[in-house]
Length: 139
Image (cartoon, rainbow, N blue to C red; front, top):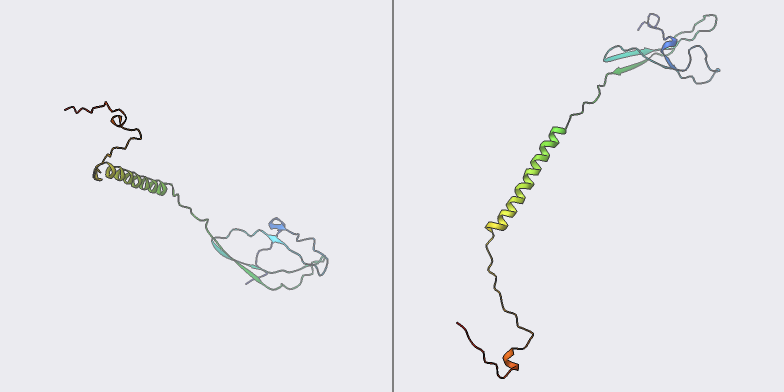
Protein backbone atom coordinates (compact mmCIF):
# COMPACT_ATOMS: atom_id res chain seq x y z
CA UNK A 1 0.00 0.00 0.00
CA UNK A 2 1.10 3.56 -0.67
CA UNK A 3 1.96 5.03 2.74
CA UNK A 4 3.05 8.39 1.34
CA UNK A 5 -0.07 8.81 -0.78
CA UNK A 6 -2.54 7.91 1.99
CA UNK A 7 -4.59 10.23 4.19
CA UNK A 8 -2.96 11.94 7.14
CA UNK A 9 -4.69 12.02 10.51
CA UNK A 10 -5.39 15.62 11.57
CA UNK A 11 -6.24 17.12 14.97
CA UNK A 12 -10.01 17.08 14.28
CA UNK A 13 -9.95 13.26 14.18
CA UNK A 14 -8.18 12.85 17.54
CA UNK A 15 -10.57 11.78 20.30
CA UNK A 16 -7.95 11.04 22.99
CA UNK A 17 -4.31 12.10 23.18
CA UNK A 18 -2.32 14.69 21.25
CA UNK A 19 -0.43 14.61 17.97
CA UNK A 20 1.75 17.62 18.86
CA UNK A 21 2.56 17.03 22.55
CA UNK A 22 4.56 13.82 22.78
CA UNK A 23 5.27 12.28 26.21
CA UNK A 24 8.83 11.97 27.54
CA UNK A 25 11.11 9.49 25.73
CA UNK A 26 10.43 5.86 26.69
CA UNK A 27 6.83 6.57 27.76
CA UNK A 28 3.77 4.89 26.32
CA UNK A 29 1.53 7.17 24.27
CA UNK A 30 -2.09 6.39 23.43
CA UNK A 31 -3.98 8.21 20.71
CA UNK A 32 -7.60 7.38 19.80
CA UNK A 33 -8.78 8.60 16.43
CA UNK A 34 -12.17 8.78 14.74
CA UNK A 35 -12.11 6.91 11.46
CA UNK A 36 -14.31 8.15 8.61
CA UNK A 37 -17.35 6.21 7.40
CA UNK A 38 -16.35 4.23 4.34
CA UNK A 39 -19.11 1.65 3.89
CA UNK A 40 -20.21 -1.59 5.46
CA UNK A 41 -16.93 -3.51 5.38
CA UNK A 42 -13.66 -1.59 5.19
CA UNK A 43 -10.00 -2.08 6.03
CA UNK A 44 -7.93 0.76 7.48
CA UNK A 45 -4.14 0.72 7.34
CA UNK A 46 -2.17 2.52 10.07
CA UNK A 47 1.47 3.39 10.45
CA UNK A 48 3.41 6.06 12.34
CA UNK A 49 6.10 8.37 11.09
CA UNK A 50 7.68 10.69 13.60
CA UNK A 51 9.04 14.12 12.68
CA UNK A 52 10.96 16.66 14.78
CA UNK A 53 10.64 20.46 14.94
CA UNK A 54 12.92 20.83 11.90
CA UNK A 55 10.65 18.50 9.86
CA UNK A 56 13.22 15.73 9.81
CA UNK A 57 11.07 12.60 9.52
CA UNK A 58 11.90 8.97 10.09
CA UNK A 59 10.74 5.94 8.16
CA UNK A 60 7.17 4.62 8.67
CA UNK A 61 6.75 2.19 11.54
CA UNK A 62 5.25 -1.27 11.25
CA UNK A 63 2.04 -1.23 9.24
CA UNK A 64 -1.07 -2.31 11.11
CA UNK A 65 -4.46 -3.05 9.56
CA UNK A 66 -7.91 -2.89 11.11
CA UNK A 67 -10.86 -4.61 9.43
CA UNK A 68 -14.16 -3.00 10.34
CA UNK A 69 -17.34 -4.84 9.50
CA UNK A 70 -20.82 -3.43 9.72
CA UNK A 71 -22.93 -5.24 12.32
CA UNK A 72 -26.57 -4.22 12.07
CA UNK A 73 -28.66 -3.57 15.15
CA UNK A 74 -30.61 -6.64 16.22
CA UNK A 75 -34.23 -6.66 15.12
CA UNK A 76 -36.65 -7.51 17.89
CA UNK A 77 -39.99 -8.96 16.87
CA UNK A 78 -43.12 -7.53 18.42
CA UNK A 79 -44.58 -10.53 20.23
CA UNK A 80 -47.73 -8.74 21.39
CA UNK A 81 -49.97 -10.43 18.83
CA UNK A 82 -48.48 -13.83 19.62
CA UNK A 83 -49.16 -13.43 23.34
CA UNK A 84 -52.72 -12.23 22.70
CA UNK A 85 -53.41 -15.33 20.59
CA UNK A 86 -51.81 -17.64 23.19
CA UNK A 87 -53.81 -15.97 25.96
CA UNK A 88 -57.08 -16.39 24.05
CA UNK A 89 -56.40 -20.06 23.32
CA UNK A 90 -55.51 -20.78 26.96
CA UNK A 91 -58.62 -18.91 28.12
CA UNK A 92 -60.89 -20.92 25.81
CA UNK A 93 -59.32 -24.21 26.93
CA UNK A 94 -59.82 -23.31 30.61
CA UNK A 95 -63.43 -22.26 29.96
CA UNK A 96 -64.18 -25.52 28.12
CA UNK A 97 -62.62 -27.53 30.97
CA UNK A 98 -64.76 -25.72 33.56
CA UNK A 99 -67.95 -26.18 31.51
CA UNK A 100 -67.15 -29.88 30.99
CA UNK A 101 -66.65 -30.38 34.73
CA UNK A 102 -69.95 -28.63 35.53
CA UNK A 103 -71.79 -30.56 32.81
CA UNK A 104 -70.43 -33.87 34.11
CA UNK A 105 -71.31 -33.01 37.71
CA UNK A 106 -74.88 -31.98 36.87
CA UNK A 107 -75.92 -34.33 34.06
CA UNK A 108 -73.66 -37.30 33.41
CA UNK A 109 -72.78 -38.30 36.93
CA UNK A 110 -75.24 -40.97 38.11
CA UNK A 111 -77.56 -39.80 40.80
CA UNK A 112 -76.80 -41.55 44.04
CA UNK A 113 -79.77 -42.66 46.09
CA UNK A 114 -79.43 -41.58 49.63
CA UNK A 115 -80.75 -43.91 52.26
CA UNK A 116 -81.94 -42.10 55.30
CA UNK A 117 -81.77 -44.12 58.44
CA UNK A 118 -83.63 -42.97 61.51
CA UNK A 119 -81.58 -41.97 64.44
CA UNK A 120 -82.11 -43.50 67.77
CA UNK A 121 -83.42 -40.98 70.18
CA UNK A 122 -81.50 -40.33 73.33
CA UNK A 123 -84.82 -39.80 75.10
CA UNK A 124 -86.76 -42.67 76.36
CA UNK A 125 -89.96 -43.65 74.63
CA UNK A 126 -93.06 -42.20 76.25
CA UNK A 127 -94.65 -45.62 76.58
CA UNK A 128 -91.79 -46.96 78.62
CA UNK A 129 -92.25 -44.42 81.34
CA UNK A 130 -95.99 -43.97 81.28
CA UNK A 131 -97.89 -47.16 82.03
CA UNK A 132 -101.19 -45.64 80.95
CA UNK A 133 -99.89 -44.79 77.47
CA UNK A 134 -101.51 -46.77 74.71
CA UNK A 135 -100.02 -46.24 71.28
CA UNK A 136 -102.56 -45.66 68.56
CA UNK A 137 -102.04 -46.26 64.92
CA UNK A 138 -103.62 -43.94 62.42
CA UNK A 139 -104.19 -44.86 58.85
